[in-house]
Image 1 (tube, helix red, strand yellow):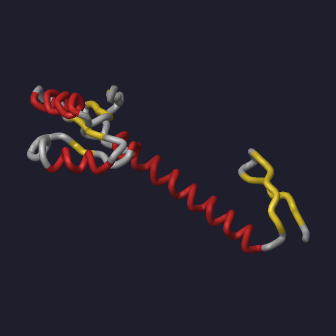
Image 2 (image 1 turned 60 degrees about the vertical axis):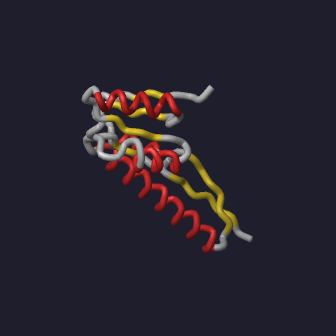
Image 3 (image 1 turned 90 degrees about the horizontal axis):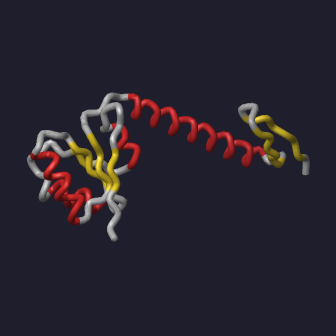
Length: 123
């Protein structure tokens, strides 16, 4: 089998077998990665509405978000378990200015600059 070297973005050298399917799969993965990076940059560059984001929707996190909302702040809520975000948004946060985020990227896109994030960890 014939092996050759290919320069990728001038940063590293990768070896590929002469099988064209492997090269095509690698190129399509690179294109997919580039598309994801461009989309995430566009998403982050949009101006957000939330004053602060809070990560951690246990009892204290939920109450802190509701308190900040009552005092006029727009808060973005995020939790590692997405079902917890949906449950909070459909029950306690219904009818408020609280914004629910299903991913870290979405959370960051909702924030005004300078971005403020508070993380609560359940003890």
